[in-house]
Length: 455
Ligand code: NAP
Image (cartoon, rainbow, N blue to C red):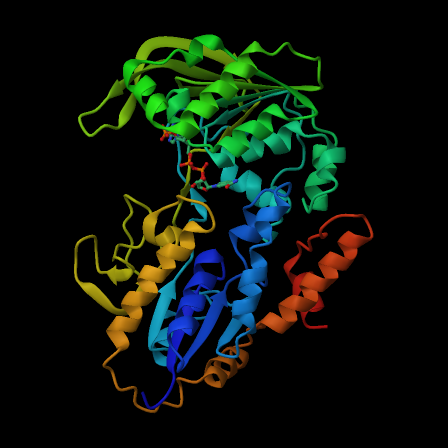
């Protein structure tokens, strides 16, 4: 190669950093720009992982090492589609890897879903974790009973945040604006509702155990929900994690309530069929389900026609994240991902390859797995990218150097935040946190973030 291969990575979350790490590990003559819409890097590590799960957030130390490599630049506060379009990306880079994740949510498609008090967990998480646009998303938590729909790890996260006392949360990096609202929370009962059975729940064992360890909430499970059908019994016999979870649930069902301030109820085999209320949520109607294995082995929840109305004043839909279409980039609307063949972007599902475009992380495969899952995922994409460029002679091009794009953005009036500038904000937040024995105090206002970063 006569010059460095220039690669743009769109999105500075885990998938973006793993893609950058893969490129610098395998190519010497490469120059990578990680382009991020927010003034801060790390995506869901900062804005998704629950504030009381600090240990998982330490993965950002790894990303710092990648960012420290002279072949990698962070261009934060640069919005693909607003500050930079595809034609401009093509002019400045040889290849682009989209790692934009899944920032929207799936809907339930039931009556009453849009009533006041029915919100998505995605939005709730964005609010308490300090995504700038969500600062004023909730200004009062006067609900006494909350239904959380779904039994994945995000559902467990939001249950914990609702169930914990403010004293417990005040030691974390939860945002100050949400602590202020949560301290006046009236929540008493939190129902976490799975449409299938306990052997099909998506949470992991550690997360289920944390629910049983809540200082501020008793836990309730109905033994009747733990009676397994034949197919579920087989899953429990064959899968150690499931059998451990079932034992844990059985123990919860045996517990005597201790009169704690809050109550967490885990319910299974119930699907929301309607959210009721005149102008805000007043109740949720649940249909009792039975399980029916399909020929593929997947176990379906099927309605029985028996209904139960649960009086609640808030519904948190935690039924999965969803990718968002990017301007001029192909999109599989059904799956909420960019169609791809092992990371090579396709014009449409099973269609032609789009030259020079790649994808990694949740926008490639959908919202599944833990942070580390994105590493193996990015490795496959980067292997294919490197293979595609292995025999290409890169002709000299003055647009394809790191200074050219920075100058272009500057001329456009975009205030690019570099990694060094982000570190100033990082250090500021940590210093503010130290004063209160917290990991950090997050700055949520974008202008303030940029001001501190540029100070
Ligand atoms: P998830 O694991 O896919 O769980 C979604 C839940 O919603 C499932 O219980 C699903 O039930 C249910 N659901 C979907 N559609 C429904 C409907 N129409 N009605 C009722 N229930 C419905 O998604 P997630 O909780 O958003 O998590 C996303 C990913 O992030 C997961 O891989 C998760 O492990 C990861 N994560 C990890 C952590 C951690 O490691 N601590 C924390 C947060 C998130 P079915 O199974 O029946 O579809």
